[in-house]
Length: 115
Length: 112
Image (cartoon, rainbow over all chains, first blue to last red; front, side, top):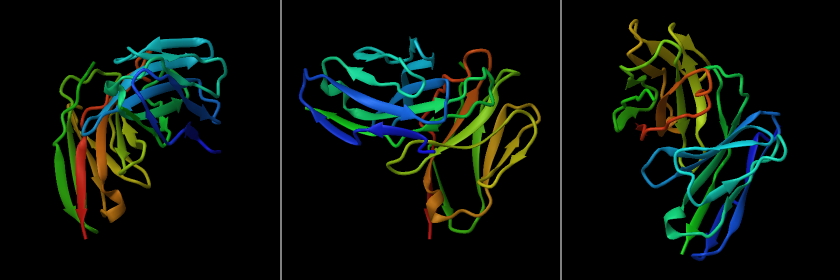
């Protein structure tokens, strides 16, 4: 299993540009999520999905869109990039058994810089 | 959401045991205590979790206080590869189990 994969690893955008961060998992996990991590901070939840066709907002959803058409993929779209979106983005997945024992698997991250 | 409190940083010497504390005084009865760690320039990785009893796995041990208001992650022999930020997170059930709340964690430095 490749686990959770993210592309690209690095990206530089200009203010106002749009782009999609890709995330895929091959573990047949129902739950997937996106976090951002700013320097010296913990991770903050952007959007999450409990299954194909179902998405919801996390703590910091503004400026981001998501969709979940398949179990495997959960892309994150930046509609009009802003310097405040400069961050490292992590995708995660887990089985969603609704239990506190569920553990999450994280991807390697995408480092995004918005000029 | 129940919160956790951890020291900002800790230091250890290689091959010595490390005890990383976490306070969670508002923990609910159904919250599991999870620990994740984040190595430099990598995504977080799961370390261990427990509910009431102490737990051991190949990576670490988790000691949980009898009143569950605190816990301690124990690395029995720290190596340089254990240098990371360690996060203590409460993971509940009933729909909140996937919304992990990450604080700033504890930055562990391991000296050779």
